[in-house]
Image 1 (cartoon, rainbow, N blue to C red):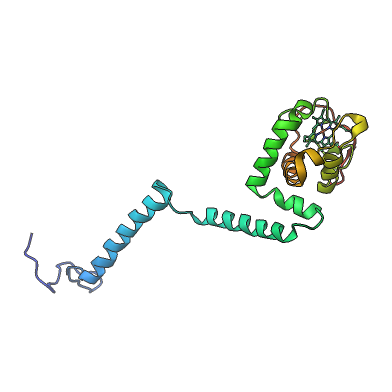
Image 2 (image 1 turned 30 degrees about the horizontal axis):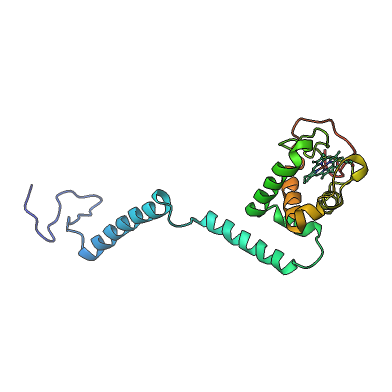
Length: 189
Ligand code: HEC
């Protein structure tokens, strides 16, 4: 190895161009090392220890917060299709609904909603209507003559909404179970 000297021309020539092999300036090296340190730190924070949220998680959280705010603004108003549909995007509400369903409904509708005494809630067929508000009405007031209780008083409005939101998430998932009853909802196959 030849001894290092500043501005010493290398022997090779390409297209008439010769070059130096000078040491990189410190400011340049500093930026290089800084990016490496940053990358390791970033990896540890976001991927190894998962301290921070990545963009997708941040986005999901913001969407949930926005939906919650929208629903809060509607609180006190009559329930409607849109609000119930919005609740299906809130993991907490769907989980609460799943909990209610497991506690009160599985005896007759089975654990996946595939139906036993009560109809299959995962097909496109509905006896009392499959729109969010129709389901809300059935759960609230029941179909007493057919053995479906009115759950409105027992569960209270919030848990009724949650269980309806949960039912909307399993609607049309077509779990094999009880034969379809009622009529096929429009727009479903
Ligand atoms: C004791 C049995 C029983 C229990 C418990 C029960 N259901 Fe039902 N459910 C039925 C029967 C029977 C029907 C069919 C009513 C009819 O023929 O109109 C029904 C119908 C329904 C329907 C309407 C289905 C359609 O096709 O229109 C929904 C929605 C529903 N139940 C939700 C629930 C929820 C939510 C719970 C728990 C909070 C629940 N059910 C608990 C027996 C039950």
